[in-house]
Amino acid sequence: MRIFITGATGVLGRRLVKELVSRGHSVTGMARSPRGEDTVRFLGGVPSGADLFNSESLLPDIEGSDVIVHAATSIPVKMRLKPEDFTHNDRIRREGTRILTDCAGKTGVKKLIFQSVTWVSRPEDGLFFDESSRPNPDRTTASAVEGERITEEAADKYGFIPTVLRCGFFYGADASHTRVMADGIRRRRFPIIGSGENIWSNIHVDDAALAFVTAAIEDLKGVWHVVDDHPVSVGEYFSLFAQKLGAPAPPHLSPWIARLLAGGYTVGLLTKSTFTSNRKLKNASGWAPRYSSCNEGLDQIMQEWKSEGFF
Ligand SMILES: NC(=O)c1ccc[n+]([C@@H]2O[C@H](COP(=O)([O-])OP(=O)(O)OC[C@H]3O[C@@H](n4cnc5c(N)ncnc54)[C@H](OP(=O)(O)O)[C@@H]3O)[C@@H](O)[C@H]2O)c1
Image (cartoon, rainbow, N blue to C red; front, side, top):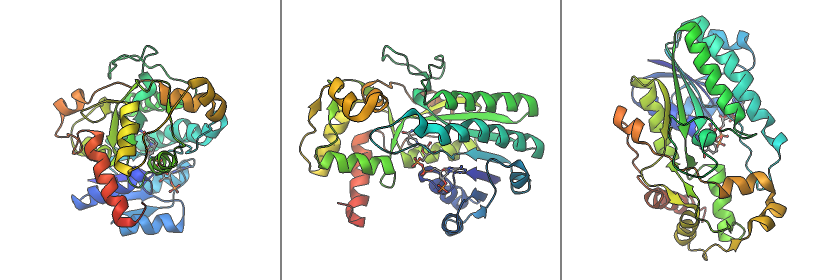
C-alpha cells in the first residue's frame, strides 16, 4: 500500500514510518525541515515538503496514496498551560484536517486515519466511558472533536473510510512529556495533586503506533480507543514511576495550591479520571498491547534511558 503520513517526524510518526516500511509498504512522510527530511529518509520513507495548510502543495504528494494518517499535532509541553498555547494545535486539527480530508477526497484516497485523544468524551463524574459515550470536550479538546467530525463528514462526501484512533495518555522513552515528568519526579517537583485516586488509561507509544499500523492495513472504520489493559490511579502511576527511577515517593499537593502554581488546565489534566478500555479494538482486530500495563511499559523505558544515559 501507499501511505501518506502527517507528523511523520514526531514520536508517533517516526514509529509508524519505520513499522510500515518494514512491512513492505511505501510511505511518504511530511517533514518541515531538512533534519525532518533526513529522519524520514533514514526510516525508509520518502519525505514530503508539503505544507499542511496549503492544498496546492499537498495534492501532488498525496496523489496515488491508499491511506492517509493524520498524526501531526502541536501539544504544548510545559507545566503552566494557557488556552492560547493550544492555538497552533487547534489550527492543525481544524484547518489542517479540513484541507487534508479535501485533498484525500480529490485524489481518491481509500482511508483516512485521524489521531485523537480518549479524554474528548470523559464524563464529569470520572466513571468509565467508551467509544459510544457522547463527546464532552473542554477548551483544549474541542478542536479534536471537530477534527473527528470533519473527518467523518468528508468521508460521507467523498466515500473514503474514516478511522478515528483516540489514544490514552501515552508515554515513551523519547516522548517529551514523559521526560519532563521523569525529571520532575526525580526532583520532587511533580507531586500527586489531591488524593491521586483518579484513574488514567495509558498506552505505551510503541503500542499506540502498532494500533495505527493495524488501522491502516485492517478493515477498521469509526472510533476506537487505544489504551492498555490495566487502567491505574494517578497516585499509583506516579509512585511506580518514582520507584523505577529510584526517586523518593512523590509528595501530595492540595489542588488549590497546585492551581496557583500550575494553573487550572494542568490541575484539571492531572486530577480528572480518563477511565476507558481497549475492548472494542482488541475484539475487532489483531491488535493487543505488548505492554499490557504501565508497570511493563515503564520497565522498557527505564532500560532505554539507562542505555542512552538519560539517567
Ligand atoms: N495521548 C497522549 O497522551 C498524548 C500526549 C501528547 C501528545 N500526543 C500525541 O502524540 C503524538 C506525538 O506527540 P508529541 O507531542 O511528542 O509530538 P511530536 O513528537 O512533536 O510530533 C508532532 C508532529 O507533528 C508535526 N507538526 C507540528 N506542527 C505541524 C504543522 N503545522 N504542520 C505539519 N506537521 C506539524 C511535527 O513536525 P516537526 O517535527 O516538524 O515539528 C511532528 O512531526 C502527537 O500526534 C500528539 O497528538 C498524545
